[in-house]
Structures are given as C-alpha cells and as structure tokens.
Length: 131
Length: 158
Image (cartoon, rainbow over the protein chains, first blue to last red):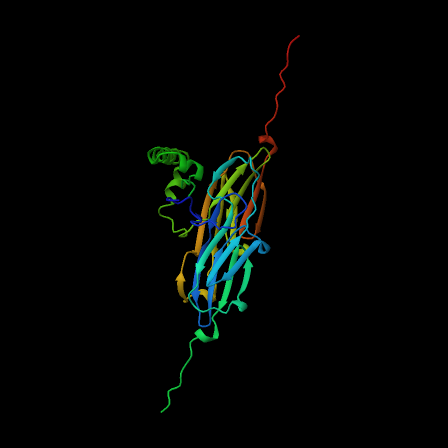
C-alpha cells in the first residue's frame, strides 16, 4: 500500500503467517510509553470484543491480533464509506528485558492496554556510594 | 465539515490520480453550492486535530451511521440532528497517568472533534437510537413513514 487508504487506518504491511480467514487486515494506532518499572502499550482497536483479542509475547516479539466481525451485511448500500472493517494485526520488537509471566492486558471502549513489567535485572537501581 | 472528501478504497486503487483529482474538484464545487455555510466554516473553526472515520448506510427503513471512536466515554459524546445534518462531537481525554510520560511511539490523538454528516431526505429526527459499544458508535435514524417508497396504483378505464 503506497497511499493512505483512509484517515484512521492503515493496512498492515506484513500479514500474519497463520491467517486462515480472508479479508483485509489493519494496523492499529499504538502508543508506547516507558514508565519506571514497566512498558505501557496502548492500542486503538475499535469494534473488537475483549475475548477476540490475541496478545502474544515470544522471543522479544509482542504480537497483537484482534478479530473484528463485519458490521454491515455484504450488500449494504453506503452513502459514505470511510473505513474498512477487518482484523487488527501488529508486531513489535521489545528490546527491554520483560518479565513475560507478568504481562497483563485490559480492554475497554475499544482501547487495549498492555502492561509489560520490566524484569528485575533491567530495573534501574540506585547504587549507594560508600564514603 | 461535511465536505471533506474521503474516498473509498476500491475507487482509489482502480483509477488514475488525474481522474481522482477531477472528481475531488467536482465534489468541492458541488458541496460549496449546496451548503455554502458549512463549507466555509471548517477552515477557520478550531475543531479538533482529529476526526473520527464514519460510514453511512441506507436502506428503505433507516439510515445507519457508524463511527469509530475508541477510548471515549459515552458521556463525552454529543450527537444532534439539525435539519438534514447530523453532528457528532466530543472529546477524547488523555488520562492522567499518560501525560508527561516518555513516549517511544505516539500515534493516538487526543482532543475534541466535531463531525458533520449530511443526511438523506426523509429522516425522522425524533426517532434516533444511539449505542456505543467497544469503541464504535452506532446511530440508527428511522425514516419517516411519509418518505418510504409507496407503490402507486394505476387505474385503467375499462
């Protein structure tokens, strides 16, 4: 895709290998923040329901895959058609050492929030200077 | 706001940029003469830096408008119908915990928005249902019975 397909969504540049469903895949908008003891990942995935979101963390790769059902029947007559409806897919390389057992996820109002706690070894530590 | 011309994806991929440009110009003119006021409000209005994507579908009974509005509390959303215009406005608030953080990546926009969508004739502005679920706002606007297609009986003289 060379052009913007619409205002809010971009089609995913890489399609997940395991896809068995046809249809377009979109790249959700994501914010990533670093806090003292965790990474916070926030993704906009409107239209997905909580149970249909698949989050994986494997070999330093974080994958978000949200299944989104169609909103309108196939033969709908559109007066305006600005966004497509389809699955969301996105992968990130996470360089910080993450404690993968403690990753938590929340979903509300179309927004997915992931907390990736840093592993003990990579947390900042204050070293006392002896005098 | 209504004149901002979003093209559908199918059209975009099939035609040359020149044809697309021509159509865009046509649309701008058309909208200007139809609704000169709303056309000239938008460059000067301070409405938000982002706008939700909307789709509008129509059938015999109702018009369905769906907007993707992730992360907005329903109480921060305003929907109104005036004349043949539907206005969706609101504010996407940034939560306290997210301000002043170190961002690695920033794609989500915050702030207020206002979107005007022209409605087809015959919509009953009293009869509107609104629903917000999983970040998608769905509005169903019933058409008034007078606007429903009616079959007209043709009498024959015998």
